[in-house]
Length: 414
Ligand SMILES: *Cc1c(COP(=O)(O)O)cnc(C)c1O
Image (cartoon, rainbow, N blue to C red; front, side):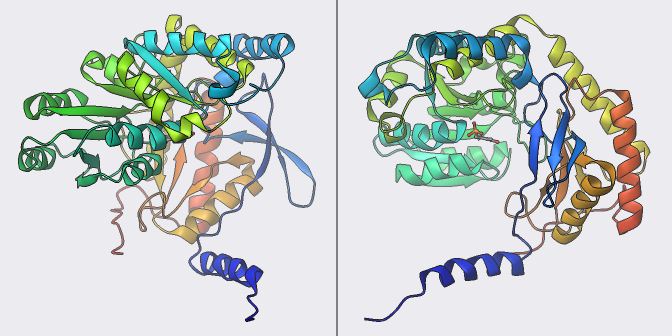
């Protein structure tokens, strides 16, 4: 028998990542409830330091909101911790039923279906919906998230990728597809460049060419619209989108994902989607916490307003400091570096010297040549935080001689 050194295969896979400067190290961080965005960083040598987090996707700090924490602890005391099995086996827990009603109401749809994460909701949701449409052609935005790409792939359907937010290209592909059933999958806020899809115009095309629409609002739910339902709500086009998908983990600060749509669509996905059927349901306490967060943000716009205000303020202060801030229409503040190693070095120096945590964003999350620090201000990042961030970035930019405002960043050819 030939002897295979299995572990050597894993080591060489890691060596390849190191060689391409793509190996990732996760910082050991403990968030401090009540003091967001403060956290404690445990260094590799075991020493603990106070830091400020500037890249959380808990955009509004809802993960520490007293009403959300109270809903979680009260429900855990009452119902215990686990869900007790898949929903096929254990049935529905009441808090999960309430959560689905809350979500359907949020998006103005007949029904909602909750999954264990936004990733799973896209992956199994898109795959299942497309499979249930005979001869379906999927039209997918070029910048779609990996969870959507996996959903498209697992559907086994034909797919065409349209250039990012390019209505003319999308129309060309729709026209070519003629009478075939078509599913357009796209996002509202694209989280790396912070740009926004023309949702209404995409719905116009969908109407004209008889296509169905599936919209990922993961980086918008809780954050946009009068009740926090997202960009489609803000733009007054929510009723025109067939399926709205979201996460409970970012703006809502908890964990889990969902789709909303017609009762028949949600029931069909419930009955066919492997990623729904064969996995244990979200715990009741998590469902109750998510419901509390959604309900709170439906009635309170103060967090959304403060979020936008602090994000706008951060952009102005960083741009005035001469840093290459990518212009965005949203709460996301990318500061460009354009090199994987320098991006990592900048993040390391920010943490070590300044106690500021910003994860470097490198390939494959963004194209090579467009590496960046992705900064996400929250309502809790005040004027003093922003001033300290600007000073720290300037020190790092000077020390590493990083590109200034006005530099053009181009994607490296693959
Ligand atoms: C984070 C993300 C997801 C996955 O959501 P999770 O709840 O974190 O699994 C889906 N789509 C987009 C665009 C995302 O950025």
